[in-house]
Length: 195
Image (cartoon, rainbow, N blue to C red; front, side, top):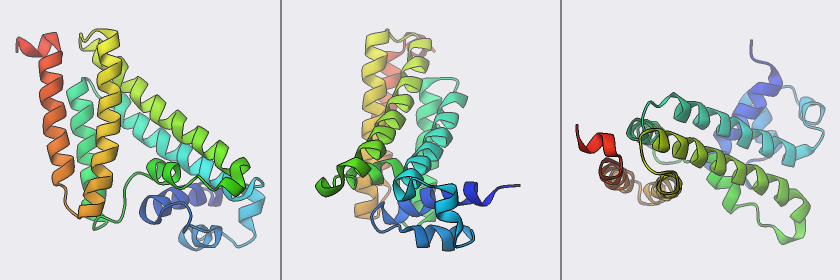
């Protein structure tokens, strides 16, 4: 059974990936999750900042779990593209990555104390995903330094492609990036060259 608190975290992540962080108010999260009105500050005494941080953590865990299931760098890439392609199409290009949304919207200079923990969590999520991808690429036989570079390229290229796909309302940017990254991985992994 999912608790009202868990429903609120999931709702926050879903709303942020569609609307962005600023337009997602606690009242919207309560309505979307069906949680009782007084529960927001009971479950999240740190207010909106805590809720945003936990929504990022939720997204981080979901993506990390998908990456961890991959048995090769190519399989990870293919799965991430499949997942994000589905999100884009199912939402009519309204939804992207909630971690990107909070990253680009956390810059209110008047509220640095609120922005800092959110950006820290977002950076940690991107770092974790990149590290997991790099570890698999190294396991595929790619030298560690090159695996780190390719993992960063995969993470940043996919996130950028998702942003451009949303703006253009077309999956072509994601498909092009997918194809190019796949070629790069095929050319980089020694075991894959001989198959």
